[in-house]
Image (tube, rainbow, N blue to C red; front, side, top):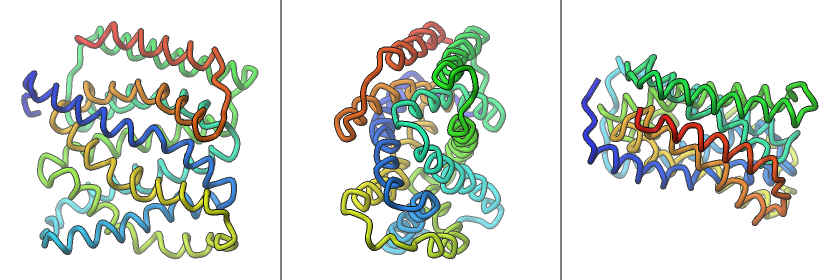
Length: 289
């Protein structure tokens, strides 16, 4: 495990804020897109578009192919952030508002810290873990309360998305130290594109008649959420530490609430704000850990 200096951590958090702001628009944009487009088309098609951009970037910069020994690790990144998270969240946004999804995705900082400990051998303190678990308990409790005591199918999809993203984030951060952040997401997209083209094509029926708002939202999740946002995010995780920078995502629910209210007119219920505030307050207690 490489040593992270205070300067590295500050820079990592700054880049993390850039990435989180980009990702915060994802759920509202997905909700707009899946209202008119098939969730499979949105979830996988965004990766196909991003892969085309990645192929251009790699060709223009004449970036050499990664060593074949790294391909299995790039496959882990692809399964997590190229296929798993986008596809599962696209399905979930068919059932619940993006603001609800944002609170459930509040589990991601804890999941990312766990993945960092597992894959990158980071060792946060006991105080950090206790606070992280407490904050996650608030998130799960909120989801159960919203679902009248039972998990909605969308919550299960979102929890699966969180697990996929956490593993993809941690492994991507490790690879960033070898390849560079934009190269990691670029190669993960390019290597996964051949198996995504066919299901995307099959799910494209009726897409041509979708309104421009759906296509604009689709372009956002393809260009920013699936590609450009990872430039900042993987650099942040690699430079500042996976567990520490991962906690920056605790700001994401607040940003998503704001974007959902701004673009979709979704109501900001007091319970959502209280749940998100409790999560941030609890994790803040363990921040120095």
